[in-house]
Amino acid sequence: MKIILLGAPGVGKGTIAKELVIKYGIPQVSTGDLFRENIQKGTDLGKKAKAYMEKGELVPDDVTVSMLRERISRQDCRKGFILDGFPRTIPQAEALEELTAIDNVINLECPDEIIVMRLSNRRTCSKCGAIYNLVTIPPKEPGKCDKCGGKLVQREDDKEEAIRNRLEVYRKQTSPLVEYYDRKGLLVSIDAARNPDEILVEVVGELGESDAVEEIRSEPDQ
Ligand code: ADP
Ligand code: ZN
Image 1 (cartoon, rainbow, N blue to C red):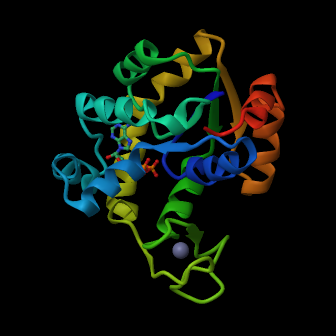
Image 2: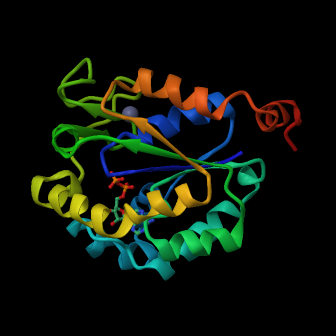
């Protein structure tokens, strides 16, 4: 089962992806997370990505595609994966098509005002990556992760200026993918201006308990 989660930044792709990981037992592949890991470790890849990310611009396609290619070739992706934040341009989608066949594209839709509200209130655990929202999903203790006690931080690109830039970049470079996948008959659009539980029910309704899922579950781990 190979799924793409499409949608503007802040629409809730990461939150939904993490639930789908539990439900279907396949990994989340988030190019944003992979870049952030590389920045933290100070790799060459991280150094290349950092300046683009902080401004809310896209990392160049060749860098992004080769990182993605390596990631989905690993063992844990052999039964499928959930792509979160990739592809983000038509050339990335075309490169992906050369690598593998996608089963479903879930397009999460949400008005810009709601997105800006969500992103500016988003806080991320610096230890485990859990996502909070100061208004809608606040941590039990301010500034502290419920799950691991880690410190909650605001991502550099969740600051107002970068948010506006990211939405602009989405409109120009990523939104053409909606039509691209619709034409291929793979797209399902879902109203994401709701709470994550409601969105998840609808996403799972669309993906279903397909044979692919049964296979994933019954196949013993090697
Ligand atoms: P969000 O979806 O909330 O914008 P991500 O964590 O997916 O956040 O991405 C953060 C940043 O990482 C992007 O603004 C961009 O700079 C970079 N990035 C992530 N995925 C890609 C991609 N597929 N192509 C180019 N840049 C990417
Ligand atoms: Zn945590």
